[in-house]
Image 1: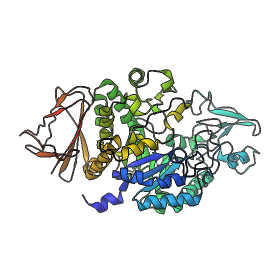
Image 2: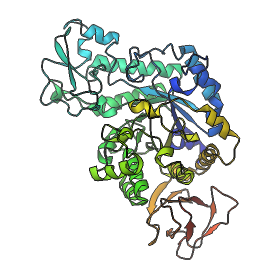
Image 3: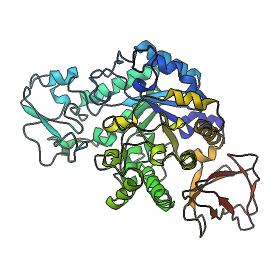
Amino acid sequence: MKLTRTSDLWWKNAVVYCLDVETFADGNGDGCGDFRGLIQNIDHLDRLGVTCLWLMPFYPTPDRDDGYDIVDFYGVDPRLGTHGDLVELIRTANDRGMRVIADLVVNHTSAQHPWFQDARSSPDSPHRDWYVWQDEPPADGPQGVVFPDQETSLWQYDEKAGQYYLHRFYKHQPDLDVANPEVRDEIARIMGFWMQVGLSGFRVDAVPFLLETAGQDDAGALPDPHDYLADLAAFLRRRNGEAVLLGEVNLPYADTMPFFGARDGAGSTDELTMCFDFVGMQQMYLSLARADAEPLANALRKRPDPPEDGHWATFVRNHDELTLDKLTDAQRAEVFAAFGPDEDMQLYGRGLRRRLPSMLGGDERRIRMVYSLLFSLPGTPVLFYGEEIGMVEDLSLPGRFAVRSDMDWAAAREQTRDPGSLLSWMRLLVDSYRACPELAWGSYTVLDPGPEARPVFAHRCDADGTTVVALHNFADAEVRAEPVLTGLPGAELVDVLDPAAKPLRLDDEGRASVVLEPYASRWFRTG
């Protein structure tokens, strides 16, 4: 595999690390994380093997939604630092071989944003049409309250404006009208500004809501929203040919695929570069709850291949609640019973506000197996800060904040020089993933693990005549896996995670025979 190609499409085998500057590291002792603290701890991420740093919102904010309620898309929250501090972070990260991307949250603003304050001041305001207004909430408008514990409607009456405005999220976050050409131009300017500062792309928040036109009087006459997303992507590529758009699209696979683009039948993506695999993530938790790999295996058998140059982004959890909304009610109940039986551990009736180690009862074998799975699955692995050291949630904090507590640097320092620590295991996984380009670039096949190995998830990835096979045991019992690897009769495979281990020899039919200990994970590679 040519290194020139893998470096051009760097996101294909990137290791993405998401963090909130406010909770990551305090550099000046005022009790709030900041850019200077992050810079001073950048080598922790470098040693882990992170190649792309994803920053949650750092913009000026009233902070009613953890920074997602923005009052200045061109600013830096003074609690976190200055533009100069951000530039220093980007320069230092680049020096360590890391690109930096940031949240692009342009589906709404804070109600305190100057645009909205101007918009509500008069029907003739130049910003009036930057938001979605109605005299009465339309019956055919958007449906579904995102935060049912906080809101009962998607429309809020504004006394000063004398109309209702649309808010898909909180009432203090009015939605922007992205069908308005002036809004579209402003979003492009925002992206262009931050790319000029040095960002390598954006994680696009709530993409389906960004493109939604329901609730507008002329919705039927508006152009295809995907044309706008394609325009944004083209603008991004013109400014920086290697920049990416990582999209939050929590939809079934068939409904997610259009967000990659490639609608003209061409092989390359012309909208989002990557989309999170929410379906696979949720089925993984169902497999964990059942000690049965089949839910995950079935999901990945059905997962469509992304367009050429596009990629799926895989993850164990993110910064929001661990959503289980794509499971059936019965399946969700199984996961709740296994990993969050107390009502306080659940959120919105659809997710869990817990981190993996506590969900798995601190079972180190199981925790390590899950992260081995993450780095071997086809897609770009995304870590949420603290996962590498086994951080747990703080249920004393409200809502989603339970998983957004301060980074545990004491645990990180304790694990840094311990070869048996979870942090050392994660470093090994990252090194092994980067050394096996087949995992990111190859075609993958979900394998039949054998008649007695239902708890085992087995898959292979093939590229340029080389094969990687990964086996993961979801059960607390020893299992013999016997997958058949067609095209490899009699081949010898080396153990990737333990090179000193005895090589695996396939029989004349290409069948492997591997005894897996409880919650074991094994990677093998030809050649």
